[in-house]
Image (tube, rainbow, N blue to C red; front, side, top):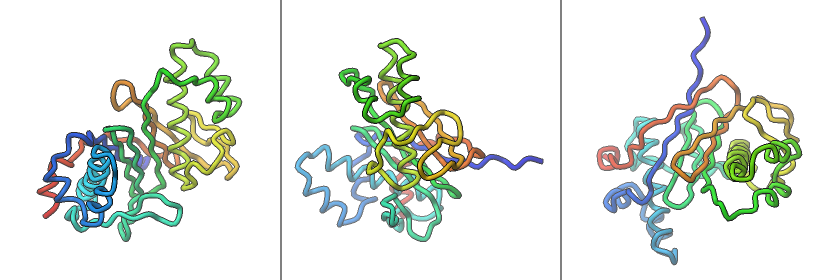
Amino acid sequence: MMAAAATVELVRVDLDAVLPEVLTALTTAGEREEAARRRNPADARRFLARRAAMRANLARLLRRPAREIALARDPLGRPQVPGSGIHVSQSSRGGVMIAAFSTDRPVGCDVEEVRGDVDVDAVAELCLGPAERRMLRTVPLPLRPRLFYDCWTRKEAFLKAIGTGMIVDMASFETTRRAGPATRWGRVDWASESWSPLAGFAAAVVARGTDWRLQHCPDVTMLGFGLAA
C-alpha cells in the first residue's frame, strides 16, 4: 500500500477584516508598541492582523492556546514557532495574507498583486533565467503579466523555503512547475503549486519533496477569542 501524501496547509487571511478586539487579544504588548511606531495606521493595523492571524491558525494546528504561541525567526530568518517542529511561511500584499504550514518539510509561500503597469519583459531580463524568459515570450502580451507573476512567486517562495531570501540573484536559478529545479545549491526535489487567491493576485507555495499535496484551509482568525483561552 502506498503511503498517503503529506499535507502542506495553506490559509488565506483578509487582514482588513480582523476585528479590533482580536488584534488586542492575540498580540503581545511589544507587538502593539511596535505597531504604534508605524506612521501609517493601515500598516500598523495590518502588522497586528498578521500576528493575530498567525497565532490563531497555529493554535488550531498545534492544539494550543493562541496566546501561548511565541513567534520568532530561525537562524536563516524564516518564521519559527520555537519547540513546535512546524515549518511556517507567510506573505502579504496589501490586505491579503497567505500562510503555509508543514509538520515535516521546509515550505515557502509568496503572494503578489498582478500589476499591469510593470514592464514585465524588462524586469524579466533582470530576474528570470533564460528558459523562463523564453517561456514568457511564447505567450501574447496581454497574458505575460500573469505568467511573469506566476514565475516570480514560485522563485520567491523557493528562496523563502531554503532560507536565503532576496539576497540571491533571482536570475541565477530557475523554477518550473515540475519537481527538481536546478539551482547552485544542488539538485534537490522540490514541488510547487500556483493559484490566484483573489482576482488580481498571484500566489505560490513551494515545499521540499514531491510527496505532498496542498490543502486550502479556512482562516480561523475570527475565532480568536476561543483560541486565546
